[in-house]
Amino acid sequence: MTWAAKPSGTRPIETRSEPWVTSAMKDRWTANLLPKYETTHGALMPVLHDFQHEVGWIPLQAMSEIAAFLDIPPGEVLDTATFYEEYHTHPVGEHIIGICQSIACEACGHQAILDHLRDRLDIEPHETTADGRFTLMALECLGACDTAPCCLVNDDRHDNLTIERLDEIIDTLPDKQS
View (cartoon, rainbow, N blue to C red):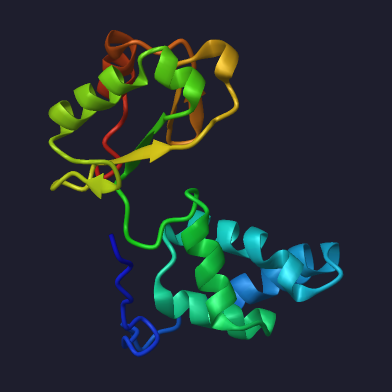
């Protein structure tokens, strides 16, 4: 097997005329986040979390704008946003379902749950349903090994998961577009 390099350094960044990072965001970050850190780089992850909480995902243009705001190289923002699974670099569904893949969850049957969701939603991990309602994620350890298998549905962790229980959870999720 060989590693194929992609020309990502020369790939154009899709942009829109309106900036993603607003003055209100910058003011909020300056007042609430930057004072907590010795350097602006220290605020990178909280800034990314705040941005994603407001917008839902982090486009490349926004990463460049965040880098300029924090006065750090854009590559450091990209590296951080693509390294951690909690950041989304593409639009996601109304509901995000993340199945834990830790060794404990693996031993307790996470694969059957993940396979069930792949069939039910007709998507693979890190894809979104055609109607935009669900994004399926395969996550690393959620820190609930004593109650495996587990998952995150939006920001709520569900432990001792079964296929039936997960179906009940999904069936009760509201349609946010209504």
